[in-house]
Amino acid sequence: MKNLEIAQIFRDIARILEIKGENIFRIRAYERAAQNIEGLTHDIEDLTRQDKLEEIPGVGSDLSEKIKEFIKTGKIKAYEGLKKSIPEGLLDLLNIPSVGPKTAKLLYEKSGIKNVAGLENAIKKGRLKGIFGIKEKTVENILKGIEVLKRGRQRMTLAQASFVAEEFVKPLERLPEVKKISTAGSLRRQKETVRDIDILIVSGKPAGIMKAFTKASSVKDILAEGKTKSSVRTKEDVQVDCRVVEDKSFGAALLYFTGSKNFNIKLRQLAIKKGLKINEYGVFKKEKFVAGRTEEGIFKLLGMQYVEAELREDTGEIELARKLKLPELIELKDLKGDLHVHSKYSDGSNSIEEMAQACLKKGYSYAAITDHSESLKIAHGMNLAELKKKKTEIDKLNKKLKGFRILFGTEVDIDTEGEIDYKDEVLREFDVVVAAIHTGFKQSKEQLTDRMIKACANKYVHIIAHPTGRLWGAREAYDIDFDKILKAAKETNTHLEINSFPQRLDLNDLQSRQAKEMGIKLAISTDSHTVDQLEAIKFGISVARRAWLSKNDVINTLPLEKLLKELKK
DNA sequence: GCCGTTTTCGGCCCGACTGTTTTCAGTCG
Picture (cartoon, rainbow, N blue to C red):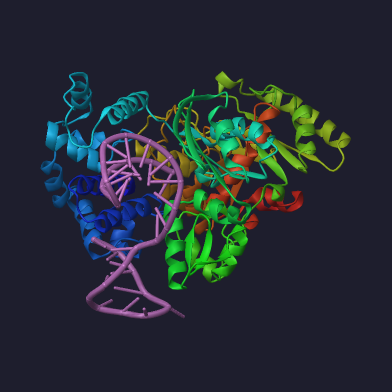
Protein backbone atom coordinates (compact mmCIF):
# COMPACT_ATOMS: atom_id res chain seq x y z
CA MET A 1 0.00 0.00 0.00
CA LYS A 2 1.49 3.29 -1.08
CA ASN A 3 -1.48 5.33 0.18
CA LEU A 4 0.22 6.79 3.22
CA GLU A 5 3.43 7.49 1.36
CA ILE A 6 1.63 9.47 -1.31
CA ALA A 7 -0.48 11.32 1.25
CA GLN A 8 2.70 12.32 3.05
CA ILE A 9 4.26 13.64 -0.14
CA PHE A 10 1.21 15.76 -0.90
CA ARG A 11 1.27 17.07 2.63
CA ASP A 12 4.94 17.95 2.29
CA ILE A 13 4.26 19.70 -1.01
CA ALA A 14 1.54 21.71 0.71
CA ARG A 15 3.94 22.77 3.44
CA ILE A 16 6.69 23.74 1.03
CA LEU A 17 4.21 25.79 -0.97
CA GLU A 18 3.07 27.43 2.26
CA ILE A 19 6.56 28.53 3.12
CA LYS A 20 7.05 29.81 -0.40
CA GLY A 21 3.88 31.84 0.01
CA GLU A 22 1.95 30.13 -2.78
CA ASN A 23 -1.76 30.54 -3.40
CA ILE A 24 -3.57 29.30 -0.31
CA PHE A 25 -6.18 27.41 -2.34
CA ARG A 26 -3.58 25.47 -4.20
CA ILE A 27 -2.08 24.54 -0.83
CA ARG A 28 -5.46 23.43 0.50
CA ALA A 29 -6.02 21.34 -2.57
CA TYR A 30 -2.89 19.32 -1.74
CA GLU A 31 -3.88 19.02 1.91
CA ARG A 32 -7.36 17.90 1.06
CA ALA A 33 -6.11 15.29 -1.39
CA ALA A 34 -3.61 14.06 1.23
CA GLN A 35 -6.29 13.61 3.83
CA ASN A 36 -8.66 11.85 1.47
CA ILE A 37 -5.95 9.48 0.28
CA GLU A 38 -5.14 8.64 3.89
CA GLY A 39 -8.76 7.75 4.48
CA LEU A 40 -9.12 5.49 1.45
CA THR A 41 -10.31 1.96 2.07
CA HIS A 42 -8.69 0.78 -1.14
CA ASP A 43 -5.14 0.37 -2.24
CA ILE A 44 -4.27 3.37 -4.39
CA GLU A 45 -2.37 1.12 -6.77
CA ASP A 46 -5.60 -0.74 -7.49
CA LEU A 47 -7.38 2.55 -8.14
CA THR A 48 -4.57 3.53 -10.50
CA ARG A 49 -4.94 0.29 -12.44
CA GLN A 50 -8.70 0.70 -12.64
CA ASP A 51 -8.33 4.32 -13.76
CA LYS A 52 -10.38 5.49 -10.80
CA LEU A 53 -8.00 7.99 -9.23
CA GLU A 54 -10.16 10.98 -10.12
CA GLU A 55 -13.00 9.46 -8.15
CA ILE A 56 -11.06 10.35 -5.01
CA PRO A 57 -12.47 13.66 -3.77
CA GLY A 58 -9.91 16.41 -4.23
CA VAL A 59 -7.93 14.50 -6.84
CA GLY A 60 -8.20 15.96 -10.32
CA SER A 61 -6.21 15.60 -13.50
CA ASP A 62 -2.98 17.07 -12.16
CA LEU A 63 -2.80 15.13 -8.90
CA SER A 64 -3.85 11.88 -10.54
CA GLU A 65 -0.94 12.28 -12.96
CA LYS A 66 1.38 12.82 -10.01
CA ILE A 67 0.07 9.68 -8.32
CA LYS A 68 0.55 7.66 -11.51
CA GLU A 69 4.07 9.01 -11.81
CA PHE A 70 4.84 7.92 -8.26
CA ILE A 71 3.42 4.43 -8.74
CA LYS A 72 5.39 4.03 -11.95
CA THR A 73 8.73 5.59 -11.03
CA GLY A 74 8.69 5.82 -7.25
CA LYS A 75 9.19 9.56 -7.53
CA ILE A 76 7.36 12.77 -8.33
CA LYS A 77 9.59 15.14 -10.27
CA ALA A 78 7.72 18.27 -9.20
CA TYR A 79 8.14 17.22 -5.57
CA GLU A 80 11.85 16.55 -5.95
CA GLY A 81 12.23 20.02 -7.46
CA LEU A 82 10.30 21.66 -4.65
CA LYS A 83 12.34 19.87 -2.01
CA LYS A 84 15.52 21.31 -3.49
CA SER A 85 14.11 24.82 -3.37
CA ILE A 86 14.22 25.06 0.42
CA PRO A 87 16.63 23.72 3.07
CA GLU A 88 15.78 20.22 4.21
CA GLY A 89 15.19 21.05 7.87
CA LEU A 90 12.93 24.01 7.26
CA LEU A 91 9.75 21.92 7.15
CA ASP A 92 10.51 20.70 10.66
CA LEU A 93 10.12 24.26 11.91
CA LEU A 94 6.42 23.97 11.13
CA ASN A 95 6.14 21.24 13.74
CA ILE A 96 6.91 23.78 16.44
CA PRO A 97 3.67 25.05 17.98
CA SER A 98 3.33 28.78 17.33
CA VAL A 99 5.61 28.60 14.30
CA GLY A 100 3.75 28.60 11.01
CA PRO A 101 4.85 29.09 7.41
CA LYS A 102 5.14 32.86 7.68
CA THR A 103 7.39 32.73 10.70
CA ALA A 104 9.48 29.94 9.21
CA LYS A 105 9.99 31.95 6.06
CA LEU A 106 10.85 35.06 8.04
CA LEU A 107 13.39 33.18 10.15
CA TYR A 108 15.02 31.67 7.10
CA GLU A 109 15.19 34.84 5.06
CA LYS A 110 16.21 37.26 7.79
CA SER A 111 18.37 35.02 9.92
CA GLY A 112 19.41 32.13 7.71
CA ILE A 113 17.78 29.59 10.04
CA LYS A 114 17.48 26.24 8.30
CA ASN A 115 16.34 23.81 10.99
CA VAL A 116 15.17 23.47 14.59
CA ALA A 117 18.71 23.21 15.98
CA GLY A 118 19.68 26.36 14.10
CA LEU A 119 16.68 28.17 15.52
CA GLU A 120 17.53 27.15 19.06
CA ASN A 121 21.08 28.27 18.58
CA ALA A 122 20.02 31.62 17.15
CA ILE A 123 17.75 32.25 20.11
CA LYS A 124 20.52 31.42 22.57
CA LYS A 125 22.86 33.86 20.86
CA GLY A 126 20.20 36.53 20.75
CA ARG A 127 20.33 36.64 16.97
CA LEU A 128 16.57 36.98 16.60
CA LYS A 129 16.63 40.48 18.06
CA GLY A 130 15.76 43.12 15.56
CA ILE A 131 13.83 40.92 13.17
CA PHE A 132 10.69 42.81 12.33
CA GLY A 133 7.65 41.34 14.05
CA ILE A 134 9.58 39.11 16.44
CA LYS A 135 9.89 40.31 20.00
CA GLU A 136 10.38 38.84 23.45
CA LYS A 137 7.05 37.08 23.75
CA THR A 138 7.32 35.43 20.37
CA VAL A 139 10.79 34.14 21.20
CA GLU A 140 9.50 32.81 24.50
CA ASN A 141 6.68 30.99 22.73
CA ILE A 142 9.03 29.51 20.18
CA LEU A 143 11.29 28.19 22.95
CA LYS A 144 8.33 26.62 24.72
CA GLY A 145 7.21 25.18 21.41
CA ILE A 146 10.61 23.59 20.82
CA GLU A 147 10.40 21.97 24.25
CA VAL A 148 7.00 20.50 23.42
CA LEU A 149 8.31 19.28 20.09
CA LYS A 150 11.30 17.59 21.74
CA ARG A 151 9.11 15.76 24.22
CA GLY A 152 7.11 14.58 21.27
CA ARG A 153 3.45 15.46 21.05
CA GLN A 154 2.18 11.93 20.84
CA ARG A 155 -1.30 10.80 20.17
CA MET A 156 -3.07 8.87 22.91
CA THR A 157 -5.21 5.82 22.55
CA LEU A 158 -8.94 6.44 22.61
CA ALA A 159 -9.08 4.92 26.09
CA GLN A 160 -6.39 7.24 27.45
CA ALA A 161 -8.07 10.26 25.86
CA SER A 162 -11.40 9.33 27.44
CA PHE A 163 -9.66 9.21 30.79
CA VAL A 164 -7.98 12.63 30.41
CA ALA A 165 -11.27 14.15 29.26
CA GLU A 166 -13.09 12.76 32.28
CA GLU A 167 -10.61 14.45 34.60
CA PHE A 168 -11.79 17.81 33.25
CA VAL A 169 -15.44 17.05 32.59
CA LYS A 170 -16.25 15.59 36.01
CA PRO A 171 -15.33 18.64 38.13
CA LEU A 172 -16.63 21.11 35.54
CA GLU A 173 -20.05 19.54 35.29
CA ARG A 174 -20.52 19.98 39.02
CA LEU A 175 -20.33 23.78 38.66
CA PRO A 176 -23.80 25.34 38.91
CA GLU A 177 -23.13 27.67 35.97
CA VAL A 178 -22.50 24.73 33.62
CA LYS A 179 -25.77 23.95 31.85
CA LYS A 180 -24.48 21.43 29.34
CA ILE A 181 -21.10 19.86 28.72
CA SER A 182 -19.81 17.60 25.99
CA THR A 183 -16.52 16.42 24.61
CA ALA A 184 -16.00 17.13 20.93
CA GLY A 185 -13.23 16.71 18.37
CA SER A 186 -11.69 13.41 17.43
CA LEU A 187 -12.60 11.99 20.84
CA ARG A 188 -16.29 12.42 20.06
CA ARG A 189 -15.68 11.00 16.60
CA GLN A 190 -14.09 8.08 18.47
CA LYS A 191 -10.92 7.98 16.44
CA GLU A 192 -8.56 5.21 17.52
CA THR A 193 -5.99 7.76 18.61
CA VAL A 194 -6.55 11.29 19.81
CA ARG A 195 -4.14 14.19 20.12
CA ASP A 196 -6.05 17.08 21.71
CA ILE A 197 -9.13 17.05 23.93
CA ASP A 198 -11.98 19.44 23.14
CA ILE A 199 -14.63 20.33 25.67
CA LEU A 200 -17.76 22.33 24.90
CA ILE A 201 -19.86 23.97 27.59
CA VAL A 202 -23.16 25.83 27.62
CA SER A 203 -23.26 28.62 30.16
CA GLY A 204 -24.36 32.20 30.59
CA LYS A 205 -21.29 32.89 32.73
CA PRO A 206 -18.22 31.99 30.68
CA ALA A 207 -15.74 33.96 32.79
CA GLY A 208 -16.09 31.69 35.82
CA ILE A 209 -15.77 28.63 33.67
CA MET A 210 -12.61 29.86 32.00
CA LYS A 211 -11.16 30.40 35.43
CA ALA A 212 -12.17 26.97 36.72
CA PHE A 213 -10.90 25.30 33.57
CA THR A 214 -7.49 26.92 33.54
CA LYS A 215 -7.07 26.25 37.26
CA ALA A 216 -7.89 22.55 37.05
CA SER A 217 -5.50 20.38 39.06
CA SER A 218 -3.92 18.60 36.10
CA VAL A 219 -3.05 21.83 34.24
CA LYS A 220 0.62 22.59 33.76
CA ASP A 221 0.58 25.51 31.28
CA ILE A 222 -2.09 27.91 30.11
CA LEU A 223 -1.64 28.29 26.36
CA ALA A 224 -4.42 30.78 25.83
CA GLU A 225 -7.10 32.28 28.02
CA GLY A 226 -9.88 34.29 26.43
CA LYS A 227 -13.44 35.26 27.27
CA THR A 228 -15.04 32.14 25.85
CA LYS A 229 -12.15 29.95 24.74
CA SER A 230 -9.07 28.71 26.54
CA SER A 231 -6.37 26.14 25.97
CA VAL A 232 -4.18 24.40 28.51
CA ARG A 233 -1.51 21.76 28.54
CA THR A 234 -1.73 19.07 31.20
CA LYS A 235 1.08 17.56 33.20
CA GLU A 236 1.00 14.64 30.78
CA ASP A 237 1.55 17.08 27.88
CA VAL A 238 -1.96 16.81 26.52
CA GLN A 239 -3.53 19.92 25.07
CA VAL A 240 -7.10 20.52 26.21
CA ASP A 241 -9.31 23.20 24.65
CA CYS A 242 -12.46 24.50 26.26
CA ARG A 243 -15.10 26.65 24.68
CA VAL A 244 -18.24 28.21 26.17
CA VAL A 245 -21.31 29.13 24.13
CA GLU A 246 -24.94 30.07 24.74
CA ASP A 247 -27.60 27.40 24.77
CA LYS A 248 -29.04 28.43 21.42
CA SER A 249 -25.64 27.84 19.80
CA PHE A 250 -24.91 24.46 21.38
CA GLY A 251 -25.73 22.36 18.31
CA ALA A 252 -23.78 24.61 15.96
CA ALA A 253 -20.81 24.72 18.28
CA LEU A 254 -20.87 20.96 18.84
CA LEU A 255 -20.98 20.41 15.10
CA TYR A 256 -18.09 22.80 14.59
CA PHE A 257 -15.89 21.39 17.36
CA THR A 258 -16.57 17.79 16.51
CA GLY A 259 -15.31 18.21 12.96
CA SER A 260 -13.65 16.71 11.11
CA LYS A 261 -12.29 19.76 9.39
CA ASN A 262 -13.10 18.41 5.94
CA PHE A 263 -16.59 17.48 7.06
CA ASN A 264 -17.17 21.02 8.32
CA ILE A 265 -15.87 22.58 5.16
CA LYS A 266 -18.12 20.50 2.98
CA LEU A 267 -21.14 21.15 5.16
CA ARG A 268 -20.51 24.87 5.08
CA GLN A 269 -20.12 24.83 1.31
CA LEU A 270 -23.41 23.01 1.09
CA ALA A 271 -25.00 25.68 3.28
CA ILE A 272 -23.64 28.48 1.09
CA LYS A 273 -25.33 26.92 -1.92
CA LYS A 274 -28.58 27.06 -0.04
CA GLY A 275 -28.04 30.73 0.80
CA LEU A 276 -27.08 29.92 4.39
CA LYS A 277 -24.03 30.54 6.51
CA ILE A 278 -22.85 28.13 9.21
CA ASN A 279 -20.50 29.14 11.98
CA GLU A 280 -20.11 27.94 15.56
CA TYR A 281 -22.98 30.19 16.69
CA GLY A 282 -25.63 28.89 14.39
CA VAL A 283 -26.99 28.76 10.87
CA PHE A 284 -27.83 32.16 9.44
CA LYS A 285 -29.93 33.35 6.53
CA LYS A 286 -28.50 36.79 5.84
CA GLU A 287 -28.20 38.01 9.43
CA LYS A 288 -31.07 35.98 10.77
CA PHE A 289 -30.51 33.00 13.08
CA VAL A 290 -32.41 30.03 11.65
CA ALA A 291 -30.92 27.01 13.51
CA GLY A 292 -28.20 26.07 15.95
CA ARG A 293 -29.67 24.78 19.19
CA THR A 294 -29.23 21.15 18.19
CA GLU A 295 -27.19 19.29 15.61
CA GLU A 296 -30.34 17.49 14.52
CA GLY A 297 -32.01 20.80 13.69
CA ILE A 298 -29.07 21.88 11.55
CA PHE A 299 -28.94 18.67 9.53
CA LYS A 300 -32.69 18.86 9.02
CA LEU A 301 -32.46 22.43 7.79
CA LEU A 302 -29.83 21.35 5.28
CA GLY A 303 -32.19 18.66 4.04
CA MET A 304 -30.11 15.73 5.14
CA GLN A 305 -30.06 12.86 7.62
CA TYR A 306 -28.39 13.21 10.98
CA VAL A 307 -24.77 12.13 10.52
CA GLU A 308 -23.39 10.26 13.53
CA ALA A 309 -20.18 11.80 14.86
CA GLU A 310 -18.16 8.67 14.04
CA LEU A 311 -18.93 9.07 10.34
CA ARG A 312 -17.90 12.69 9.99
CA GLU A 313 -14.73 12.27 7.97
CA ASP A 314 -15.92 13.39 4.55
CA THR A 315 -15.61 9.93 3.05
CA GLY A 316 -18.98 9.88 1.36
CA GLU A 317 -21.27 10.27 4.37
CA ILE A 318 -22.51 13.76 3.41
CA GLU A 319 -23.56 12.62 -0.04
CA LEU A 320 -25.41 9.60 1.38
CA ALA A 321 -27.03 11.66 4.12
CA ARG A 322 -28.45 13.97 1.45
CA LYS A 323 -29.96 10.95 -0.26
CA LEU A 324 -31.20 9.69 3.14
CA LYS A 325 -29.24 6.49 2.61
CA LEU A 326 -26.84 6.36 5.53
CA PRO A 327 -26.52 2.95 7.16
CA GLU A 328 -28.01 2.50 10.59
CA LEU A 329 -24.93 2.10 12.73
CA ILE A 330 -24.47 -0.71 15.20
CA GLU A 331 -24.86 0.19 18.88
CA LEU A 332 -23.52 -1.31 22.06
CA LYS A 333 -26.94 -2.67 22.97
CA ASP A 334 -27.08 -4.72 19.76
CA LEU A 335 -24.39 -7.10 21.00
CA LYS A 336 -25.58 -10.41 22.40
CA GLY A 337 -22.27 -11.74 23.59
CA ASP A 338 -18.49 -11.70 23.57
CA LEU A 339 -16.69 -14.29 21.45
CA HIS A 340 -13.15 -13.93 22.74
CA VAL A 341 -12.74 -14.23 26.51
CA HIS A 342 -10.02 -15.90 28.58
CA SER A 343 -10.32 -17.60 31.95
CA LYS A 344 -7.97 -18.98 34.60
CA TYR A 345 -7.66 -22.13 32.50
CA SER A 346 -5.04 -20.27 30.44
CA ASP A 347 -3.76 -16.77 31.14
CA GLY A 348 -6.92 -15.06 32.41
CA SER A 349 -7.36 -13.88 35.99
CA ASN A 350 -10.97 -14.91 36.62
CA SER A 351 -12.82 -18.19 36.67
CA ILE A 352 -15.21 -19.19 33.90
CA GLU A 353 -18.12 -18.59 36.21
CA GLU A 354 -16.92 -15.11 37.14
CA MET A 355 -16.51 -14.18 33.50
CA ALA A 356 -19.92 -15.62 32.64
CA GLN A 357 -21.64 -13.81 35.49
CA ALA A 358 -20.03 -10.53 34.42
CA CYS A 359 -21.24 -11.09 30.85
CA LEU A 360 -24.71 -11.90 32.09
CA LYS A 361 -24.68 -8.68 34.07
CA LYS A 362 -23.81 -6.78 30.90
CA GLY A 363 -26.97 -8.13 29.36
CA TYR A 364 -25.30 -10.69 27.10
CA SER A 365 -26.87 -14.04 26.40
CA TYR A 366 -23.65 -15.88 25.61
CA ALA A 367 -19.87 -15.75 25.89
CA ALA A 368 -17.19 -17.91 24.34
CA ILE A 369 -14.44 -18.83 26.78
CA THR A 370 -11.52 -19.06 24.38
CA ASP A 371 -8.45 -20.09 26.32
CA HIS A 372 -5.13 -20.52 24.59
CA SER A 373 -4.21 -23.76 22.90
CA GLU A 374 -1.45 -26.13 23.86
CA SER A 375 1.55 -24.71 22.00
CA LEU A 376 1.31 -21.26 23.53
CA LYS A 377 3.24 -22.20 26.64
CA ILE A 378 3.80 -18.61 27.72
CA ALA A 379 0.04 -18.20 28.17
CA HIS A 380 -0.49 -21.60 29.84
CA GLY A 381 -1.91 -23.13 26.71
CA MET A 382 -4.20 -26.03 27.52
CA ASN A 383 -3.50 -29.71 26.93
CA LEU A 384 -6.17 -32.31 26.18
CA ALA A 385 -6.69 -33.37 29.78
CA GLU A 386 -7.28 -29.79 30.85
CA LEU A 387 -9.69 -29.30 27.96
CA LYS A 388 -11.76 -32.22 29.19
CA LYS A 389 -11.94 -30.74 32.66
CA LYS A 390 -12.89 -27.34 31.26
CA LYS A 391 -15.65 -28.86 29.11
CA THR A 392 -17.12 -30.62 32.13
CA GLU A 393 -17.10 -27.40 34.12
CA ILE A 394 -18.80 -25.48 31.31
CA ASP A 395 -21.52 -28.14 30.95
CA LYS A 396 -22.17 -27.97 34.65
CA LEU A 397 -22.33 -24.18 34.69
CA ASN A 398 -24.64 -24.10 31.69
CA LYS A 399 -27.13 -26.24 33.57
CA LYS A 400 -27.02 -23.77 36.42
CA LEU A 401 -27.17 -20.49 34.46
CA LYS A 402 -30.57 -19.33 33.28
CA GLY A 403 -30.86 -17.50 29.95
CA PHE A 404 -27.17 -17.65 29.34
CA ARG A 405 -24.89 -20.01 27.49
CA ILE A 406 -21.18 -20.43 27.96
CA LEU A 407 -19.67 -21.47 24.65
CA PHE A 408 -16.81 -23.94 24.72
CA GLY A 409 -14.13 -22.05 22.88
CA THR A 410 -10.43 -21.84 22.20
CA GLU A 411 -7.92 -19.39 20.82
CA VAL A 412 -5.68 -21.59 18.75
CA ASP A 413 -2.25 -20.73 17.47
CA ILE A 414 -1.59 -20.47 13.75
CA ASP A 415 1.92 -21.94 13.66
CA THR A 416 4.73 -20.81 11.37
CA GLU A 417 3.50 -23.20 8.67
CA GLY A 418 -0.11 -22.07 8.93
CA GLU A 419 -1.15 -25.23 10.80
CA ILE A 420 -3.43 -25.23 13.83
CA ASP A 421 -2.00 -26.85 16.94
CA TYR A 422 -5.03 -29.00 17.84
CA LYS A 423 -5.99 -31.92 15.64
CA ASP A 424 -9.30 -31.89 13.77
CA GLU A 425 -11.00 -34.32 16.14
CA VAL A 426 -10.24 -31.93 19.00
CA LEU A 427 -11.20 -28.80 17.08
CA ARG A 428 -14.51 -30.35 16.11
CA GLU A 429 -15.66 -30.35 19.74
CA PHE A 430 -15.51 -26.58 20.21
CA ASP A 431 -18.45 -24.23 19.74
CA VAL A 432 -16.14 -21.39 18.82
CA VAL A 433 -12.62 -21.56 17.42
CA VAL A 434 -10.70 -18.31 17.29
CA ALA A 435 -7.34 -18.50 15.52
CA ALA A 436 -4.45 -16.09 15.70
CA ILE A 437 -0.78 -15.61 15.01
CA HIS A 438 1.25 -15.36 18.20
CA THR A 439 4.72 -16.25 17.01
CA GLY A 440 6.95 -15.80 13.98
CA PHE A 441 5.87 -12.20 13.33
CA LYS A 442 9.04 -11.52 11.42
CA GLN A 443 8.44 -13.95 8.59
CA SER A 444 8.27 -12.67 5.03
CA LYS A 445 5.09 -11.08 3.73
CA GLU A 446 4.40 -14.15 1.58
CA GLN A 447 4.86 -16.56 4.47
CA LEU A 448 2.69 -14.57 6.84
CA THR A 449 -0.03 -14.11 4.25
CA ASP A 450 0.02 -17.81 3.37
CA ARG A 451 -0.28 -18.77 7.04
CA MET A 452 -3.39 -16.65 7.41
CA ILE A 453 -4.94 -17.93 4.20
CA LYS A 454 -4.29 -21.50 5.30
CA ALA A 455 -5.92 -20.80 8.65
CA CYS A 456 -9.00 -19.41 6.89
CA ALA A 457 -9.18 -22.56 4.82
CA ASN A 458 -9.32 -24.74 7.96
CA LYS A 459 -12.89 -25.87 8.22
CA TYR A 460 -12.94 -25.61 12.01
CA VAL A 461 -11.60 -22.06 12.29
CA HIS A 462 -14.48 -19.65 12.75
CA ILE A 463 -12.82 -16.34 13.52
CA ILE A 464 -9.38 -14.85 12.89
CA ALA A 465 -8.46 -12.85 15.99
CA HIS A 466 -6.54 -9.55 15.88
CA PRO A 467 -5.80 -10.18 12.21
CA THR A 468 -3.03 -7.62 11.67
CA GLY A 469 -1.27 -8.04 15.02
CA ARG A 470 -0.57 -4.37 15.57
CA LEU A 471 -0.07 -3.31 19.17
CA TRP A 472 -0.26 0.42 19.61
CA GLY A 473 3.03 1.88 20.83
CA ALA A 474 4.71 -1.51 20.87
CA ARG A 475 4.47 -3.35 17.58
CA GLU A 476 3.65 -2.64 13.97
CA ALA A 477 1.12 -4.74 12.12
CA TYR A 478 2.45 -7.96 10.57
CA ASP A 479 3.63 -7.47 7.02
CA ILE A 480 0.68 -9.14 5.33
CA ASP A 481 -1.18 -8.80 2.05
CA PHE A 482 -4.46 -7.69 3.55
CA ASP A 483 -6.41 -7.84 0.29
CA LYS A 484 -5.49 -11.49 -0.17
CA ILE A 485 -6.56 -12.29 3.36
CA LEU A 486 -9.89 -10.56 2.85
CA LYS A 487 -10.42 -12.60 -0.26
CA ALA A 488 -9.59 -15.83 1.56
CA ALA A 489 -11.91 -14.94 4.44
CA LYS A 490 -14.72 -14.19 2.03
CA GLU A 491 -14.27 -17.40 0.07
CA THR A 492 -14.08 -19.63 3.13
CA ASN A 493 -16.79 -17.87 5.15
CA THR A 494 -14.30 -17.09 7.91
CA HIS A 495 -15.06 -14.15 10.15
CA LEU A 496 -12.60 -11.46 11.09
CA GLU A 497 -12.36 -9.98 14.54
CA ILE A 498 -12.50 -6.41 15.67
CA ASN A 499 -10.42 -6.79 18.81
CA SER A 500 -11.61 -4.13 21.26
CA PHE A 501 -8.52 -4.03 23.42
CA PRO A 502 -7.52 -0.32 23.39
CA GLN A 503 -3.93 -0.98 22.28
CA ARG A 504 -5.11 -3.29 19.51
CA LEU A 505 -8.32 -2.10 17.86
CA ASP A 506 -7.54 -4.70 15.25
CA LEU A 507 -9.02 -4.70 12.64
CA ASN A 508 -9.13 -0.92 12.62
CA ASP A 509 -11.88 1.28 11.17
CA LEU A 510 -10.62 1.41 7.58
CA GLN A 511 -9.88 -2.31 7.44
CA SER A 512 -13.26 -3.17 8.91
CA ARG A 513 -14.98 -0.97 6.37
CA GLN A 514 -13.06 -2.70 3.62
CA ALA A 515 -14.12 -6.08 5.02
CA LYS A 516 -17.74 -5.00 5.11
CA GLU A 517 -17.54 -3.80 1.52
CA MET A 518 -16.31 -7.29 0.62
CA GLY A 519 -19.31 -8.81 2.37
CA ILE A 520 -17.32 -10.32 5.23
CA LYS A 521 -19.08 -10.50 8.60
CA LEU A 522 -17.12 -9.45 11.61
CA ALA A 523 -17.01 -10.36 15.29
CA ILE A 524 -16.53 -7.62 17.88
CA SER A 525 -14.75 -9.12 20.88
CA THR A 526 -12.70 -7.97 23.84
CA ASP A 527 -9.98 -10.60 24.31
CA SER A 528 -10.63 -10.04 28.03
CA HIS A 529 -8.27 -11.54 30.56
CA THR A 530 -10.12 -10.03 33.52
CA VAL A 531 -13.72 -9.17 34.31
CA ASP A 532 -12.95 -5.44 34.07
CA GLN A 533 -11.65 -5.75 30.53
CA LEU A 534 -15.08 -6.76 29.26
CA GLU A 535 -15.89 -3.04 29.36
CA ALA A 536 -13.48 -2.45 26.48
CA ILE A 537 -16.19 -3.69 24.14
CA LYS A 538 -17.25 -0.04 23.72
CA PHE A 539 -14.01 0.70 21.89
CA GLY A 540 -14.69 -2.16 19.49
CA ILE A 541 -18.12 -0.67 18.89
CA SER A 542 -16.44 2.66 18.15
CA VAL A 543 -14.27 1.02 15.50
CA ALA A 544 -17.33 -0.69 14.03
CA ARG A 545 -19.31 2.52 13.86
CA ARG A 546 -16.43 4.37 12.25
CA ALA A 547 -16.32 1.50 9.75
CA TRP A 548 -19.97 2.13 8.82
CA LEU A 549 -21.02 -1.25 10.24
CA SER A 550 -24.65 -2.08 10.92
CA LYS A 551 -26.01 -4.72 13.24
CA ASN A 552 -26.21 -7.11 10.30
CA ASP A 553 -22.50 -6.92 9.60
CA VAL A 554 -21.58 -8.32 13.02
CA ILE A 555 -22.14 -11.95 14.00
CA ASN A 556 -22.33 -11.48 17.75
CA THR A 557 -25.49 -9.45 17.38
CA LEU A 558 -27.20 -12.72 16.45
CA PRO A 559 -29.20 -14.71 18.99
CA LEU A 560 -27.47 -17.90 20.10
CA GLU A 561 -29.05 -20.41 17.69
CA LYS A 562 -28.49 -18.20 14.67
CA LEU A 563 -24.94 -17.50 15.75
CA LEU A 564 -24.09 -21.21 15.96
CA LYS A 565 -25.56 -21.72 12.51
CA GLU A 566 -23.63 -18.77 11.10
CA LEU A 567 -20.37 -20.18 12.48
CA LYS A 568 -20.72 -23.50 10.65
CA LYS A 569 -18.58 -23.61 7.55
C1' DG B 1 -5.31 22.55 -7.77
C1' DC B 2 -10.25 21.31 -7.63
C1' DC B 3 -14.93 21.77 -8.96
C1' DG B 4 -20.04 22.75 -10.73
C1' DT B 5 -28.98 21.30 -8.62
C1' DT B 6 -26.77 29.10 -10.52
C1' DT B 7 -20.87 28.13 -13.05
C1' DT B 8 -15.69 24.92 -17.41
C1' DC B 9 -14.17 30.31 -14.84
C1' DG B 10 -14.09 32.25 -10.53
C1' DG B 11 -14.88 30.99 -6.59
C1' DC B 12 -12.80 28.21 -2.64
C1' DC B 13 -15.36 27.66 5.74
C1' DC B 14 -15.11 30.56 9.57
C1' DG B 15 -13.87 32.72 13.85
C1' DA B 16 -11.04 33.14 18.61
C1' DC B 17 -6.82 34.40 20.60
C1' DT B 18 -2.09 36.36 20.59
C1' DG B 19 1.45 39.52 19.82
C1' DT B 20 2.77 43.38 17.85
C1' DT B 21 0.42 46.34 16.24
C1' DT B 22 -2.71 51.40 16.30
C1' DT B 23 -6.17 48.03 12.77
C1' DC B 24 -4.14 43.48 11.70
C1' DA B 25 -1.47 39.30 10.36
C1' DG B 26 -0.37 34.86 11.92
C1' DT B 27 -1.61 30.61 14.03
C1' DC B 28 -4.75 27.32 15.30
C1' DG B 29 -8.62 24.29 15.24
